[in-house]
Image (cartoon, rainbow, N blue to C red; front, top):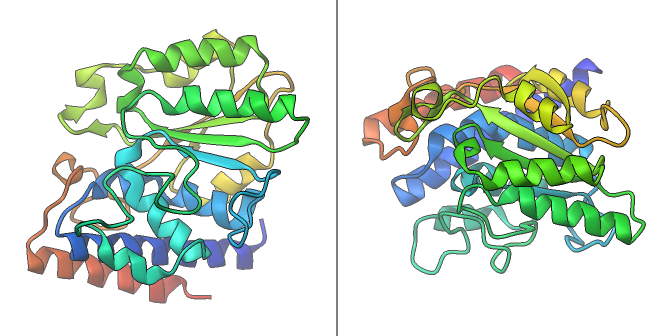
Length: 280
């Protein structure tokens, strides 16, 4: 992958991380940990890979993105604003009364949100329905779903996984954001779904595992979808909770973060430094 493109994407992802911290500052709290673990994936999708048009968010032939782990919505809000789906000033309303940026995505409040999510375990089913609908309409568009590893405890995911393989939905791509942590602790302690890739493979999916915070690797693997014609594609993305903030990385207490002022200032300083380091 061209080094200039990589640097631009890394710079964009860093700015999106800064947008997340701006929302934390405005709303005084939020699900920061998971938002920062998956934001590199969402950045590459919206800025490099998906067929979308911010000026025409309902374009029939667009690719679709479903954030099944709806509590990570600050990542999607940050990227949508950076991509130009809405004015970035709206990010400053996060956490306020009647905001267009609720704690889980609402398709009726913001352009670019394809479905209301937040009740975990529903996104893959929604995405599959969209993928099958696109196929019936003879469109070449794809559907990308992102869920968390803690979300895999929900049984509806496995019904959707089975149905997707049965219907040969190779226009469906699932990212599982495997940061290893959920609100109560390690996913392996609470409900162990490892090895994630082998489980989906047994259901009939084509599977690849990557470093989900490595932008070149994310872009590279997306160029190969569908991994196997006639099969849905799974990308097991190994990530770090709260990636980009040194003192928070890998910490379960940063799943939902209500920072003290000095802690937030330190986080902002770290991300601002990254922005300067990777600036094209």
